[in-house]
Image (cartoon, rainbow, N blue to C red):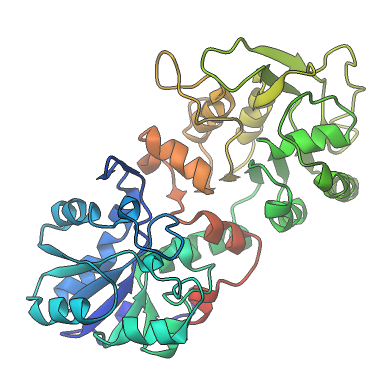
Length: 427
């Protein structure tokens, strides 16, 4: 249960309310090409409008390195938000100072002020209390609704709470509740599918799922490091040799867990390889044989086929069809799936159709989660690349919970505290 105050626990009627949103949206030619994060902010904004609040929205976009940069201006969000909310949205060309004060003074009931990129100021990422006080000047209350940034101790997530009464918006509450419920009280059996590049980035998450879940399936570039740790040749694939000891430690941890209870831990059995990550590349499948750490009686380990190897000039770019089928099949036997990280290089565009040459493993997971093979488990999806992919496919609304926060959802799943949530007022 969410233990922090929300906008429903505080009087916001007629107040000037500073709202931290996460409008870190993709732009192409200064146009917003994905509106998911903007849409998720609407319930909080509508609630405040219904309570006659003057709304001052602050956000970051991209990484402008503490300096104004037109490529990362939030101005393109103005028209998108205005159309979605059905009211006038005014843009301030800064997030602090006289320009903000004047615009706030002119705001009429039902109007919204969106301020320019917080990260045009270096003090935002320094968690500067001086900068936070400047942000707070025109406001009576602060509402944290940017879940995608609450794992950061920045001025607009941490220091700001020392300057104003601070509560959560509906999005932050919904995200924390959904993720916490799955991690603490999920309907079993529970399966975790984890991709991404670096093991270290998700080490605590993997360890927690080994102790918590019934099935853990790894994919993405991090699986290459596990394959190398098990003695496979991985050619020119992306690997992190410094993380080989971590991979071996995780395998030993999974083996110990599997000796105590029914538990499956798997890396890819087969992989899709090519000499470069291009839609025109010639691909082939390399079959390593079975790679499951599990109850030996039910899932005996086999010796890998040493004649099937990745060539010296080849790269692993996706899981193979057998690996994808094993993951999809496992989903037919579980009731909850947490998915964080794509299985391949999904950003490579297809020559024909919507699916790239190295996205088939990821697509197979999507089909299974949406019940295409019969059973439809509860799905919680996090991680920037995973969410970005299903956003591009127009499938976000079809899953049970798609997190707006990549790093924040990862931290919360791993059992860590979120500074931007911890700093809010307790109920």
